[in-house]
Image (cartoon, rainbow, N blue to C red; front, side):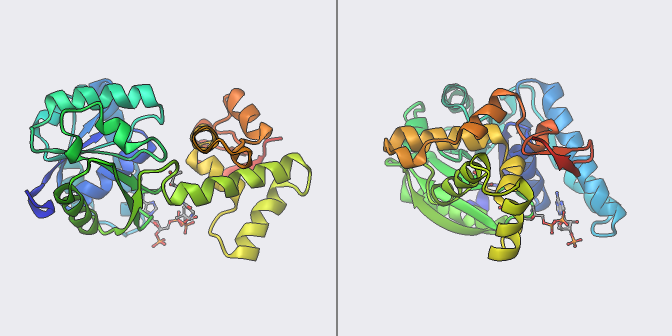
Length: 296
Ligand code: CAA
């Protein structure tokens, strides 16, 4: 089956990334099954998408009819049950190997045998996830960037056993979703996070060595390098837990001390300050997600 014929889309995980992927897929005309641990969590994810689209309607960037039609294309699933009806699924659960392996086993059991099972993982080996399934040739990495509706890239990651047919179908689908594709081999951090995470971690070292304030560090990257966000505010957006997890994968898998996570990053995560999603990371955020001040 080519990418163009895969019209039924499953998303596993109704968190920040899963919601973004579901929104983009439904906005492209796919019928989307949004899964989370319970139907209530999947429904809550769908409501959050609805609230985000309502802001676009208020700004005159989307019609109320288009918003309603997009939401109608998203069905909240009870657990993974809805995956029995999909042509392709993207797993976007918490960045935790055991959770993902469990989900891959269950999704593999439920999905039609010709369906593709992809992961939005930012650092876990696709080959390892594929090994938990009976369809390793149809397992692939489909790594979207945060925030998914606004970011143009999909990084496709080929596992050792990924077939050319799977790769071609996912590339075609990603382009249909309006994204530009890059392809990475299956190695820790793939391409994007191999470059990004050492940069964010180095900003953490600069902060803990008092080279400058968080505002200095972020303005340095924004105004001096023309990055849209500074590294500390970007880490807050990605989630400090996710940032630390990827840094730990790079450190462990390459066995090179240059990747060791900064203590300040570990401490903020230990404190439960995961960034924007918990209202506090390097900065403090109000309930609308607006930055209100510095955290430390
Ligand atoms: N759906 C559709 N459109 C949306 C939207 C949504 N959910 N949310 C906002 N928009 C629209 C807005 O209405 C706005 O439209 P106009 O410009 O026409 O008014 C437009 O998108 C821009 O919105 P904002 O003003 O909020 O955005 P901004 O210009 O301030 O940019 C940003 C925000 C895109 C996040 C920008 O700051 C940026 O690019 N930051 C860097 C993000 C980045 O690096 N992401 C990658 C992280 S790494 C990763 O994800 C990989 C990993 O594994 C860790």
